[in-house]
Length: 84
Image 1 (cartoon, rainbow, N blue to C red):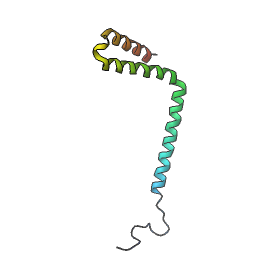
Image 2 (image 1 turned 180 degrees about the vertical axis):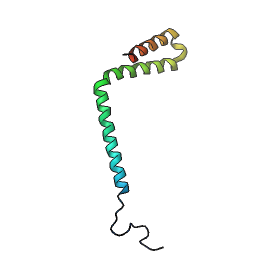
Image 3 (image 1 turned 60 degrees about the vertical axis):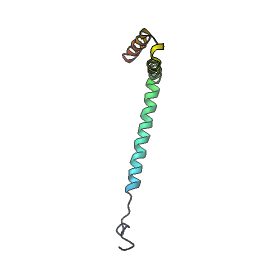
Image 4 (image 1 turned 90 degrees about the vertical axis):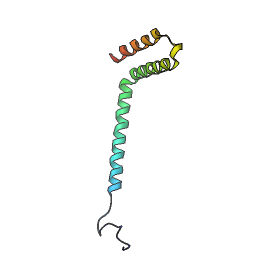
């Protein structure tokens, strides 16, 4: 095995990893921009949905401490928000 077997052919450079990194950076940037747009347009509504989802999960974890009617009321609120 010669010393040069792991090197690229003369005049060629292996830019593959750099190109892949550039594509990933581009996609990450685009993803962040889309997230910012969604946050600006839908942020307050999404906050309400997230708050209700946390309440639902907490109510289910608490089990017997929460009455079934309270849980149903949370589901009703969630349905109303999701239909907006």
